[in-house]
Length: 216
Image (cartoon, rainbow, N blue to C red; front, side, top):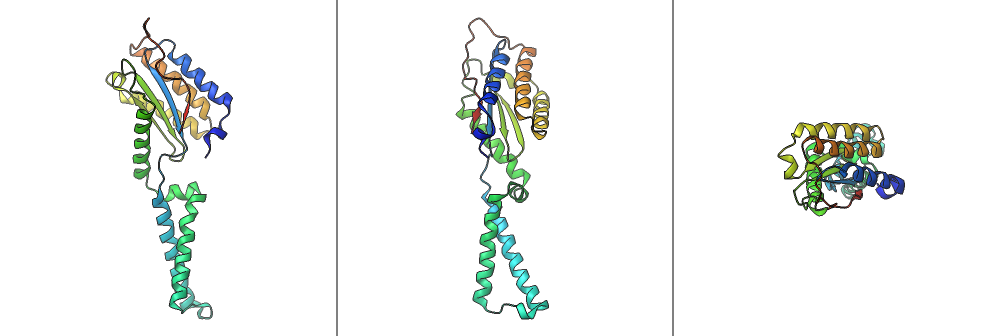
């Protein structure tokens, strides 16, 4: 998935505007990040290859028992058929996100997404604010996951259930195909949450992180 092509410059500008407006009255920085996927999941290729190899071997057994005229008895040929089927199977997940998702456990995807979000938190320097008041909104499309990470200046004040509600609302919008609208609403809500918890802008506040949507 090429996110640069999926979204227009007008979409990117909408997000920049949403971040600017949300940060107008708050002492905080909101950093939205999107990635096509958080992990490589080569385990899916291995699993698909093993399954296809086993299916090919089972097919050879069925032919031997039920269709002897089509049976294969040459050991080398049997080996080559099973290997070829395995190699073909290992390629299939590259062409089907649905199949790849089916072959990767939710636990594996959750771990990869969390790790990628934490890396983005560091790479985008969300921690690099004077009062540790940065918020990362992280969207990973392949895994269908949204993660919100607030720096310690915020997390020690704002309850996790508030972020969970924001994540649920954004996930619902993405599921409905309303990605930009959902992200705009999430950014606005971040600003409201900070205001509600006393993170008001002071006279010496500056814009410490850029307002762009980051594409991974």
